[in-house]
View 1 (cartoon, one colour):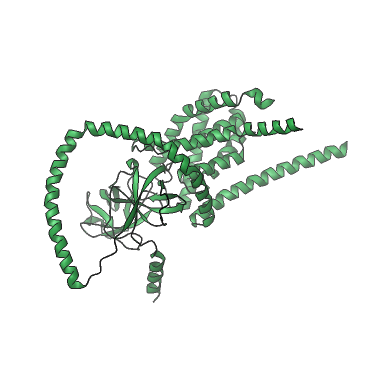
View 2 (cartoon, chains in turn orange, purple; view 1 turned 30 degrees about the horizontal axis):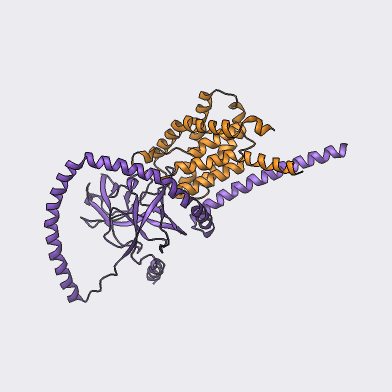
Length: 175
Length: 291
């Protein structure tokens, strides 16, 4: 009985590792760098992490996790509350619907699909915020953000792979 | 056996139903959070404040290496430019000395005229310095998170960086305050072009160059004109520098902020005592127009 309880707690904590890793990454990327030029190149780390973990472990990273990541992004980036949660849930919805085609695909294809999905996501966010504020945002900055996110994708993915290999070995989850 | 199978199907259906309900709740919660945030509700303010209280201290620690690197870079950058800077400063100093004499004369003249008119000067503004600990992480918001410690800061107070307006306090939570920058899409500041006294609204558009809108005559505005606060509306006192006109294309006027917001490490939150009276003034103007 005691062992069962301990095992449940262990599994619960293991399943929260992707969420915790995403929180830390978002937090690190929102630290001010006090450099004019570099400030333009801030990727949407939350989106990359949700995409990675949502594809890799859909049972660990669902709508609730995406919602929390969105809320955390809002808080860390000082965005209006709820905007990132909404787009994060849309991302999980897309992964839920089309993820099965990407789970076994090669990295290049996964990256390309990420490009398309992020584009849809940014467009959605852009439209929601345009409705919210009653005016359109500068598309140039959004485009820079999009390209930066695409460029940072392999790097953030490599970090996520490292976390997965070191903290989430397959056998420890399957046990 | 059959009834047990049926029960399992029912539990399964119920599970799916609750999952969908949970999803709907999360979805609605996000939408309501957006709407409440727009309405400046206390609910989102409390959640936001709670998160700020947790992330603020950690952010301060994590930000430290970045600040050190930036200082080292600035140190070497300054050394490499020391000769040019020195020549420029000497030239500037000559002009400043001339201006200083002029200012002294004007100050005396001003005091004499003030006495003649029985003029009551406005109270001196108090200020605190605050360290920037976080910046907005995406292209949809232009905000800062600053550490204010135990100082009494209120919503609406003006934030200066390098002696010019960079924004205003949007939210205060414990030892932290959120600052909405003049470049943010939500920022609207009544301004006046110093040279021609043409009034307008400096409207943030989420780019580095906010637009000057609602100006009566764009023809009276030239590139390089200094833009200062007009004091209309009561949120900002008049005469604070904001930026200068960077381009005039028909009725589209762009303004470049005087302070390089992205490089600022510390800001000054100034209390002119105006934020307390904003509601009173709004009431006053309302009753004035009703009459």
